[in-house]
Amino acid sequence: MPDSGKKAGLAAVSIRRRVVDALATGAAGAAVLLVLLPLVAIFGYLLYKGFGSLNWAFLTQTPKPVGEAGGGMANAIGGSILILGLASIMGVPLGIGAGIYLAEFGRGRFADLIRFTADVLNGVPSIVIGIVGYSIVVLRQKHFSALAGGVALAIMMVPTITRATEEMLLLVPIQVREAAYGLGVPHWRTTISITLRTATSGVITGVMLAFARIAGETAPLLFTAFGNQYWNWNVNQPTAALPLQIFNYAISPFDEWRRQAWAGALILIILIVLAVTAVRIAAGRGMLKGVS
Amino acid sequence: MGVGVHVEHLNAWFGTTQALNNISMEIAANHATAIIGPSGCGKSTYVRCLNRMHETVPGARAEGTVRIGDLSIYNGTSATQVRRRVGMVFQKPNPFPTMSIYDNVAAGLKLNGFRNRRRLDEIVERSLQQSALWDEVKDHLRKKSGASLSGGQQQRLCIARALAVQPEVLLMDEPASALDPISTGKIEELIFQLKENYTIVIVTHNMQQASRVAEFTGFFLLGELIEFDKTEKLFTNPSDKRTEDYITGRFG
Image (cartoon, rainbow over all chains, first blue to last red; front, side, top):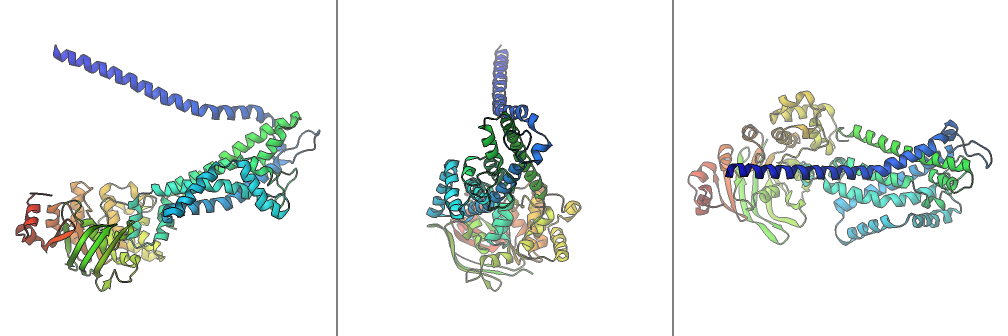
């Protein structure tokens, strides 16, 4: 009798465990769905609205004057690539460098100050960053330019990359660094060839997050890159960018332009996904190479 | 070839806490010397003072005389210079996770600017043979990552990595404490062979291990060197009561 009572008790526990397990798994699954839903919804809606206006002309031609049908955003796509390239050239090394400083060499008040500044900078509204770009580049050059846009976006990239790099470097176990010190490798060399290398995939994630974030920014470009109806590869000239073009077309009164705005948004997302994927693959290939 | 290590009045601190108290010890060339003692007695700190790894901990410092052969290491010598002559094997195997087996072994040379590829190939093979790992890994030196090996293999990889820079002294900080008995046996055999070419200092919690591999043993307690003698003498006829209490298991 006591034996069977025990068994019944165990069975009850087992049923309760199974129910709780199912509930927890279900809740986690539901959370995943909720997270994915907006992404899928946005992408689906963009496809629905934008795919129709997407054609070869859209990818290869500059905008047509109002009233003329057709035309495309080729110059804006090129402009975005130019501005994002400029921003990355300036922002990525600076951000990674500052992150390395904080993780490996920064001690005391000064490092805390940098950390605090980076966090505050991360929270500064992007329109304010645009004004900063305007006052430090545009006012000096006396005209709008891709360079000014690049500077503004670089300023937005730096704090994200800095903090991500710092966090990722700090995750590298002390044992790995000690292994390098123990071989007589100097601190700076260990930092570059061992610590940074071990943290590479995390640092790249940080960089790509920052990149994806600035790729869609419109506000910082309003007073810096300004936009352009024509092709421009000169960094000192006003330059079109996809977010600007989307913004201008979306608030326009013309149906044709508004349709093109949807297509532009679709292209922007596809370009970001392509860039992130390409960097991931390239970085993945390089992972098991030796000490450079 | 191994060289002797001369330690005189060595003191070490973590911040304001003194971890080592006036240690003097003569470590014989081409022999294995074991360091035993209870946890927290300063064993690890002591060996880490012999290649200036101690000072990599923020706030840690050491004072005194340590000579590796004729190189006085606390006297204007750079720490990196010292560490190239005094190799170290750590408690937990710590291969570089992003590197292949080959690159792990070559790391010490490559990162210090050594570029001759043919020589590197030779040194990698010789080091892996010395650490008795060559036969197990020779077919996938460049394809497999160091982290993909088993724990015991990883530790032998770390030994090969330390040997590749051709040190004169090899410090081993509980090199087998994270390994199973078979791997431990392999490491101990290895120590026997390595003695021919290197001076070995091994920290161990395992007194049988000390008596198996080491000619000399030092017993540490609360940051002091209580007794230092031939291993056989220390284990069979210790001259200090505290040593006897420890080795017979009465405390610690």
